[in-house]
Length: 305
Image 1 (cartoon, rainbow, N blue to C red):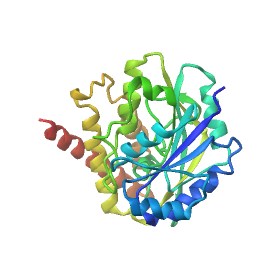
Image 2: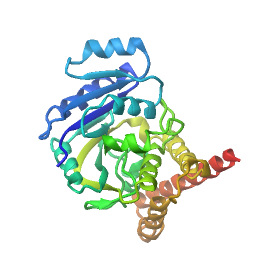
Image 3: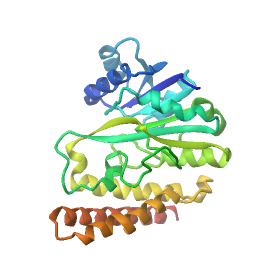
């Protein structure tokens, strides 16, 4: 069994120090301790000096060559020495058995990647009008995902891992897609996962819900403005994923299954009891977010012409 894990955390500002420390502390309490913890910073010498002065010496600090989440992850991979490279967001806290449960997926030699359940950790009370089906908007696992271990197209970046050797075979995260600072584009995780599947057809990526991290949800992430922007840019990201120049033959199968679940189960369930204020508000939000994603997708397609 593979059990040598390098954990990569990306940080881009001083303001996230408290989050990063909480994340690191949770990694040091794992039942399966990581081989190393790598903190990757944006290319800013002042930022690097700040974190070197605040963190323990056993935390390996790496400065990325360029800004952006994909660049940071690539820098972490290149400095990792573990057989598995795991990724967690700086504002997430890992369950103590996160790595132990995550690496069990690699008992099958065909498995090249694995991820787990991301639970929202609300800084304020969870709004009654916010449906679990939209947890992807806040970077968490959403209702509609498998409830037991299953093969998936891709896992979510806050709780994600790959065999390190895979990057040598298929390349690294694309730096022209994905999160950049506070911009809300995404798509780097599906893109690299589809690339792996295309080049290594017998490979498997596993979703293991027993591997749990808790992802902090700040107040601003449930504001109407944030949700609209996040959903719109999600649509743009999906359009980028389906760009013929990306050389990915995979379709948006995961998105199609999610939409099927949304409009055959989640929406009808609320319509049947639409007289309840909670159901009505959740229904409006489900439809509004869906509309924003579709608009972003069409805008992204127009931008490719």
